Length: 144
Image (cartoon, rainbow, N blue to C red; front, side, top):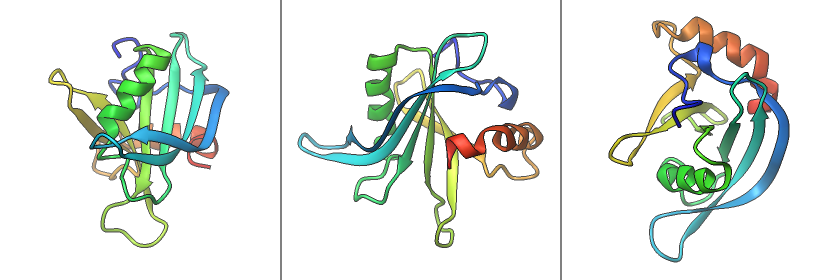
């Protein structure tokens, strides 16, 4: 993911042309015969570096996208190559009805997925202002 892995909010790619919009996208989960279902959207990026921006939205199934983030990333990497950014859109843990979060999924050197909050970003986060600007510009496409 070296080409597109954002180091900061300023590096998040803007979505360009929508290539995939599948509200019943099956993704692999733990176990041999299990899969979850989420809403996947993939855009070509509207940035200087060619690549893709993928957002997987949890739709309330039994298997969370967080639990399957590594497998989701691997499947999308096989299809789109390593130049893509994966965002996970899911219910906020311990929050009220309807609250959702957006996290950037990164794959560590050991192959395990790690998430970092994109939205809502806490005000004390040094990336807060940049993330708020990015979300203001692209929220309707990303989580709409």
